[in-house]
Length: 578
Image (cartoon, rainbow, N blue to C red):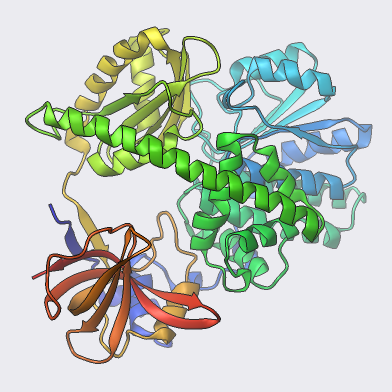
């Protein structure tokens, strides 16, 4: 079934909130996203105050004690881009603030799994920390926190994931998603929380006369490139506060003020940091950092971000790119297996949607670092929650990664299964759209049955009508490089603040397949004018229509840069000939 193209509605009152100096298309785009004139600018001064995030003052106090006493601080991170950037940010700030040899430890996802586990605390004790600080994890680490306390080690949790019914017994917890938090943004990524905590610490140390206030501000500001990468990578909603953080980080990247590691990753991806967009962070930088955590050790990515010279950064970025290439090959193979499994399941049932309530996949050959990506693709195909499992490091143990759709809160769903089937799930955590879990292989069929039952009770909340939300039609005169450039830099676009999508009628002039899987198009606006370049990525088939056919096209207006030349092009999201 072709998706329905639905144009966003914009009222005259909404348009009046924006200056008429903006181009008409951009006014329409901003109005449809609820932006006011005051939110067009994204200065750091408009960021929600550091002190308004509960727990930052207490965290700064505990850090200050550690610095005064010469305590050893150990940061425990996570093995994705958000966790890597948050770890690098805290390491950068603590070193600049004069702490005694701060260190970091990220759990090997294949040995320890996610978060501060008791086993990880046992490994951490070999480093003799006085204070363990979690970034992008910890809010569900009850056993790990307890193990640390029994060993005489304080734990300071910084996290953004949803808490359970009870909180770990940590010395301090900073998390905007705690139930009683009044902080103005629930959307901070893990790196955003770490940024707020380090900013509070800088203020505290400046008040104590241990650092200059201007120096502390400069240290934090220099980490905004990390905040931008981690925030975009973690797909948190880009509310106004997050747009400020990302925009400020993007400014540093474009102006050449970013760290050598990020410059090197841009170079290895063939991207120009001077013209960087949030999409470059999401589709070029983040996958390379994530590849290290998926296949080997996220420390490779962290060390790249902490590199202080171009040669070192370049060497590490090259390794990250090679790992990303390996990840792509592995994912393609696993995806083919998963698609075949789904095809067989759909052939076996009469109704592919209501009967296939949810997909729960397992293959003994799959790599546990990549199952989340497979779950995402199958979720997109079926519009159903999906869990994909791979073998864990321990014999008889499975590690799973789940992805959900609007209408089904995945973490809550797993909590319901756990409550009704105590002991079935060994461990789980996550949020509405993504979660991780582990269980024993011999409980897989039990889990599948319980999972399908829970999803079945929520089918009425899932909207099966496919929609493409459009920002309307562009005239032939508007379809040019000036507007394409405006759109590119008008964001940052991302989760909850989508890049503009337009629609209209075009004549199909010609088409051909390029790179074996992309459809290259030449189009002409229905009102005439010059031919327009178009590209439909991952559309490996020609349209069943001759040249001269009229087509309905939903597209993004983008800038194609090739050998120093910039041209506007239509990135086609959907096309159908009429």
